[in-house]
Amino acid sequence: VQDLHPVHFPSQFGLAASRLRLSLKIMDKVAKRVIVSSEFVKRELTGLTNISDALIDVVPLAYSGDVFKPMPVEMKKDFLDRYSVTGGYILFVGTLFPYKNLKTLINAFLSIKSRIPHSLIVVGRREFSAGLPAGEGRIVYLDYVQTEDLPFFYSYADVFVYPSLREGFGISPLEAMACGAPVISSNGGSLPEVLGNAGVLFDPEDGGMLATLILSVLQDEKLRRELIDKGLTHVKKFSWRRTAEGIISSCEKAVKGRG
Image 1: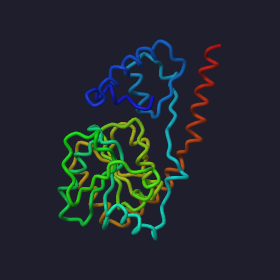
Image 2: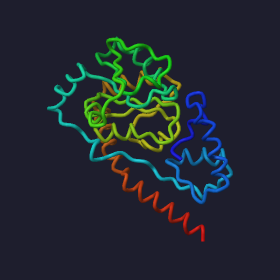
Image 3: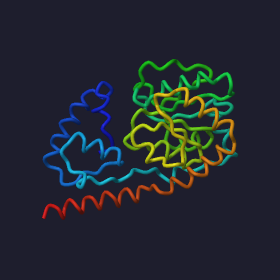
């Protein structure tokens, strides 16, 4: 179970909401073990089902270390020219479902844009968005970006912001840190346990605080450097090999329990 978003945001997930509720009822009766992506999801699951927490294994997700790593500075201009990006930028990467809370980031950016030269770049398919303002000179929607280009966007961003209301895990902040971007993230759901002390956290309902934090990271080079260094160290705790080992271990427990 990666997350329980369809339960909490049913209008955003359509039929998936009722299907997940049905799956939880079935899981309650037949599951030998359950694998979840974070302690946060584990707490949610025990609150929605009768499954004992002793039967739930927390197996964190990860990022692809061979793909997401700092990109060479000498490639920056040519790469950004391909996307007609000029100057420094604040970056968001993710789906544009309303629960991602992009509106709060946009409002925070608009409140400080007269004080900074940066643009806000949003990478994510707009078909999932609802009620977002149209792109203007300083807000750029790039829609779908191929995976091989994402490490460049992360690497050349002056700050990566992840304002989500709720996350079962949150891979994008890990990818950003792995590429050497300083990260500001909401404290929604599992994000505090995923980021540890390697990112700056804020209440996703507090756009004013987000605006202040963005200014701090952009204007304080010492803070930026600390976040970058902490992020590059922190992401070493996560790998798909460890995730696979955790899944195998849970499966072995399920098989032994059957006997």
